[in-house]
Image (cartoon, helix red, strand yellow):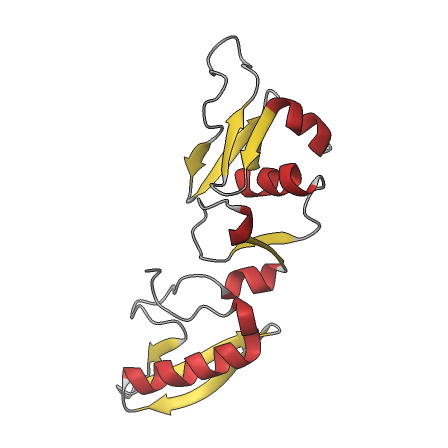
Length: 167
């Protein structure tokens, strides 16, 4: 099923680029939705908007289409990492790889790229271009984290997010 045109979206939704909020301009579904209500619902850290009877689209993609008048040609990245913050200033085009590097740590230590070695020391590693690069073995978690931060910023530039958690 093809995506609806941004022009047709504008008949159904309004978008405030300063707040990132998408609102209903019409009341679909027989009065279950009130004109002016915020569109969509939260699911897995992202807002999704119902378009038509069955289609649910990510609100950040709908926001982009409403603002720019075209669907984003690539993935979109939330600059601050908050998937519910759909302000246009917080959305940027990204490859899937760039989007992944701007994510929160999936480490049990709460620090991206850091792990414990079998010998009790700390290791650091980074993925780039589908290849794992070992950065070394260190005496402390802080040293391993520092090596990761330097490598991550060098490899990923403005998409680099190295903290374990969002503030």
